[in-house]
Length: 306
Image 1 (tube, rainbow, N blue to C red):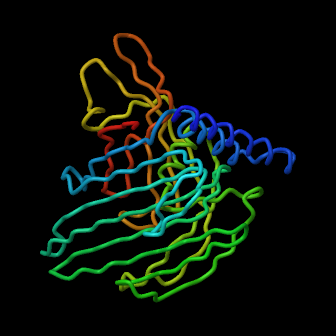
Image 2: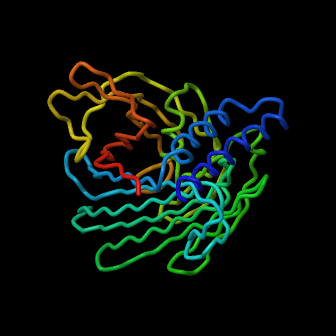
Image 3: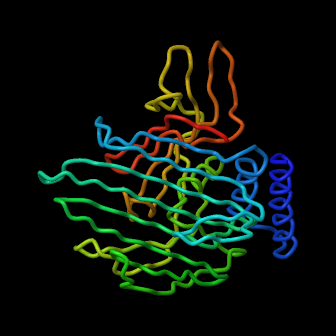
């Protein structure tokens, strides 16, 4: 039954590509990459994919990071504590937990996100909850986002109280593809086989007190800096080992995430194959192996399907 459902999901994604192409003459390069690559990762393979990472600042591990992706058809998914019924498309989640000493205080941060995309890979809803504990005090912030054909509507809460709402206009997906910061690493892996493509994302601007001040829709560009490059530094199941060399694409992505929020550029080393015993093995889909934001590194430790 699961295989039949996932096959239907892949067919739906393919159908959307055809509809967009027919309506617009030709889909844009970005859309083509997103649609085709998304169906390969989450439409044709069984189960929910879970990627786990060690989070390091310099050489010191400060936490862990997990992100999941799955194809859903007529399912119930959770967005910010609210159940969305009859959801069809792609459902992403992330979970970050880090702790380190800053200015003599132990600061612990957890961040959880959920994102729902339709069968055309257009984001519909997103949610981010961040809890920071410092000096015995806890602050919880939430960003709830909803997308229409031409607007991103957001609500910003601090400790459960809504303190800011707003609307940010964006172009139609048919003319300018858009995504959300909360699954930007998944977008990066989809763009690994291309060069010079870009998407639009909501950009969160914070004031000097760390409070959300404004939200703007900005362009995120992804440039390929190296292909068939050796990728080192992964851990766990992907740790450097004698006789096996991991290979892939190195990407530079501007104007997106900033650990653990949003704002700065990052690089993503996407694993596409490995060599072992003088043989080259191509992975069935690209994996974000190493993600770097300043002096913070996310190192892939495992990938599972369940």
